[in-house]
Image (tube, rainbow, N blue to C red):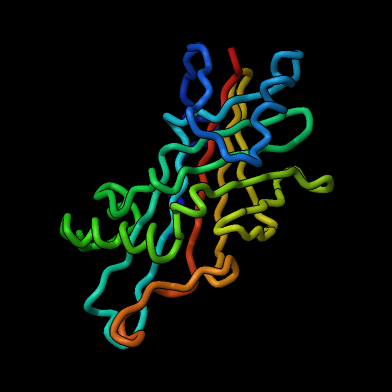
Length: 224
């Protein structure tokens, strides 16, 4: 799956000054209260703007019968979290139950020329959440980002999924204004690195490839 990017300084959106409301569900080990306290104490804390942030993953088909299947785009338009500008870090999370599968616009951006049926999309989403991600047991994906001390455009991204954390060094494009901060990047990861078993049927003749293409485009604005 691929995270579809899209925003630099020339198109950073205007962020409204509406009060921030805490989400109903927060992962147990997410440092949400740390950021709330820091913001209350005057630290330079930005809140992720869920209306403009996007995380996407491209899932590729494989196996001898791959021609009978589809590549897929999985996306989150509900990225929640914080950026600490002074500390050069960010913490984000995605509720897996809110992931979408094969939005037509995202498939077009990924240059896929087919569109699975509604039934096929629902089946893909069910298999992904229930059989692969085990979302009832592991309901969130967490992303912790820290800035490199040597290179501000290089960041260490720690992804926690299915109870396993893996680290990646990722080149990141950054844009900022007086009230907003945008960063985007992409990386490749393997499902098996997180203890996941790629979905397959027919003895592996039709399967999802282990490798996933992951992109994030994150926008954050000031906390009011």
